[in-house]
Length: 367
Image (tube, rainbow, N blue to C red; front, side, top):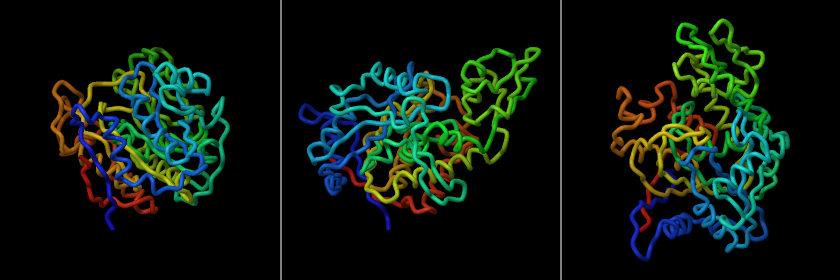
């Protein structure tokens, strides 16, 4: 059976602002059907990397937290530390970044907990019995929660095509060693004739894997964890995935991690498709939005939600002067056009096959 996905566009009036619309959407989608009374509710979201301005503002989180509190729940905002060098690689830096980006108990109405602790080592091994993952390493605070709510900025992604609810849950809930496990399928290689020895890959790598000798880089695979940050940062596109199916395996592992997080407890999912940048919010920059703002989506089914958001983006015209407008339009799909080495459909097909939801949906508009 098709799942219901509720949607509201970006139009407002004097009596109905965007935060009011978010509140209406999540209520119409049935968030009150969850028993929140005296239960801990983890609101899983991304606090934004320093320098990136596409992440969701804390105002959105406050609407969700206030709704959970009104239903008797105990909400907290959470995310896990990153694998790469940046502003969220440990618990202290992560909290500093969240505060700098406007997240605080005052602005959001609840506390912030970094789920895998100070050094990214506070996790729980969760049996999932997947094809690729047998025990997912999930941030402990996320596993301690009674209820999971994903609050996602929907955007493009250089490894998975787009970043939606399932990426927010699966990759985002993995501890640092969990992220290593998800990324470890494909380790990058260097086309030396393209390399200019600039060293940007060295600066962004947390594991000292890029080694520059005689003005050319090579990747030390004994150190590399396969996170792919060097691929994104290389100004000459000299670094690429070492195996042709590594992104597909990453997608599958990410879906199995999502299953580990969501199984055996209630969950609810919200995606906001605005500032739709071509790359992840983990970047220290955000390129121009590839399509116009779309609106607010909510569902109990994260697969249907991601499918609905992807379809909505693909129905939109491209914004001029963006990565999408400069791309070779060979795929009839915005995400495939900007990241032709990815396969977002395969990720959702796999999610559906392991019981995370259905790609069939009924889109219900909330006025």
